[in-house]
Length: 311
Image (cartoon, rainbow, N blue to C red):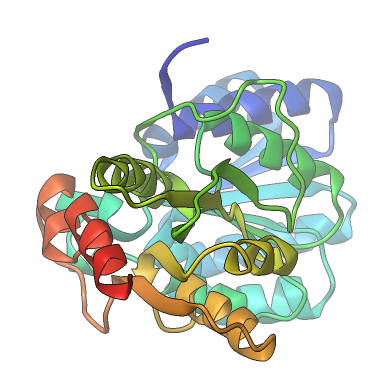
């Protein structure tokens, strides 16, 4: 197995394999075939591919219509457009109507990099999390991405998949099993646990745990994988083992993972200390991903510092 793979290729390769066996799989794009690499799907299945142009809301409407005909539409675009721009259409035409639309948002948070603040979705998790019945997934590696895309095709209902396009390292084997609403413990700790979502922050948390170990602090890492439904039992289990919980997300801490974890801990009377790492009420900006990670406090040093402060 390769050490890393582009997440967009994990998505496209899986869609191609699914389409070969299921003629109801269709793909829609908002003129971003070269960005998402779905041009490969278009070439192989031209009659099951629709380029909707730069009209994301219309794309969701078309996807909803296709769903009423028994199709399984996967509609993708940059995360900023797949969330902010299409919110009402996705809310009403797909979710409220109890249809079967799979919406993909790419380049979440700081991974948008040089596309800048206008294209940098920090708030998509908060928006999607309040849609009733919607499943919100952010896989952490190519293996989990492929597994969740397969499950999305099998599971009737609306889903929001949040993925970067660029290469990310494998954390799991290709035969690893995943399930909506179930987190994975990547590392057990005795002092603090990083509850992380998405490839960027899961990997940052693993590095932070290594750094903390050098100073005698035992840190664990819980890979959330599914923001909604969130694995309450896994979070509470970790909260019962450590003195502090730190949520880590590449998104606004208000309403996203930070809010969800806070609710779980507060509603269950947990007494461990808690802090949130993520975007704090700011807009995005242009820069390299490394610069933006430091700029918005998503770096390993910030995770380590927060753990030390809490302990």
